[in-house]
Length: 562
Image (cartoon, rainbow, N blue to C red; front, side, top):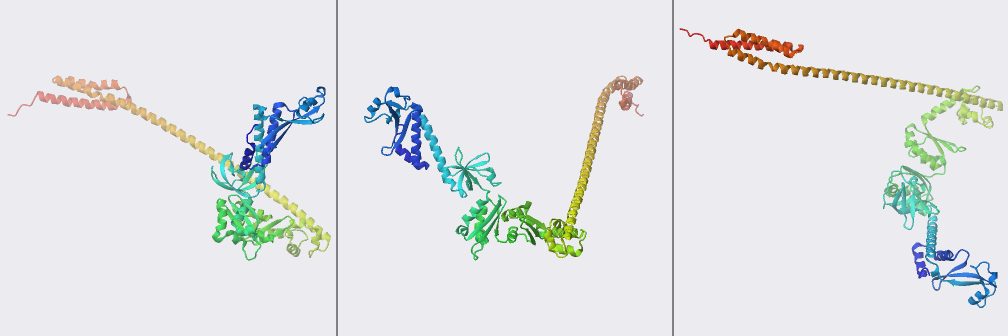
């Protein structure tokens, strides 16, 4: 036997996994059948049975009884009568005898094959159990824990299985980490080969409806009915409610005391704004409620095309449309009507233009234009599409010929108006193109001027740099001349010493001192410092003469007075 105490194991797995006991027994039977065929081949005729009394799985091999060995064509499933009598003394030719097989002789390979069959059968059984448990819960709200994030999709642990919250069903700007608790709406349950896939959503409008059912007892009791809900997830939502009891306000019941009920829903949706609207059987009043808080001046209904033209005061136009058209878009989805919101000023201007178009038609005077306008024919364009039968019912139109003439004139006016508008559009496009070309040319000229200014600035900087280098070179040259001039006092001192040593040869000392400028001029040999050297030499000569005079006076002191 492959498994000991099979009965206990089957019951335990059935409790833990929630799998039917019969399904597990069937899996074991198929596993042993597969192991036997792995051992003895696919041609043998075997049968596997589970014994409820002993808790064992028994494997039997069945063989057909034939008369002699010559009659055996398939040795795996046939035995002779002689062999059959040994197994069952009462057997006859043509009987099928079953013998119990020892499962211990199947071997390791057969046991491994049986194991794989059991594992696969259990997975299939678990998949079926999960699918059957959650297929009936489709459309409910479920709580889970974030297990991991796979390619921006959030994998949620529901306890006995996993669910996926796709990125397209996530509210923008909501972030989750592993271990966070999450509440979502079961949008779909898919049966796939790798396992049932439970698809969650936090952007579905039904998620909002179920949240209100949880928070508002009147909704769960059926007193208040949710007639519709639309969302732009994470930004704004609208929900229409109606009451079956005239004493209960549906909006107040959803808001709760000091807004406690609706605040719980808002917190779950991470601050999403919610408009609670009273549903009305009249589509026009329902649209007016859906566009609140904007005031509505007039509503024009086209039931054939299911459209409404909503006229609002100029100061309420932006409120009715909403940020980026959000309010009117949600109201259109909630009411299931196509809404065109225009201001009173624009509407009045359109009415005036339509009346003028009627007056512009031939054979239409002011009185007939007024009658047509009162009957709902507000422009020549509407008149061009009006049936002849309806026009004949208007006072002022006498016969079918006149009605046909009016319709043809209106059609011609519509064609001419379309051509005129096309010409104006072409002219406007040409003007825009010319303005664009002029702007491009101005930009090119400005860029060229900037480039020229940059080049001029660079040239000026280069010139200043050259002047700075020349000044630095000149300063360096002057420093060299100054060093040479500084060396002259030494020569002068030598001349002074000679003059002091030979006081009587005053003229010779003077001549030597006078010769020093020539020596100085030969050393410098630069025109820029010639004057400076001459001045210094002159000073040197004067100093030498003064020194020489002083020495002479010392050598020949004046005679004392008698």
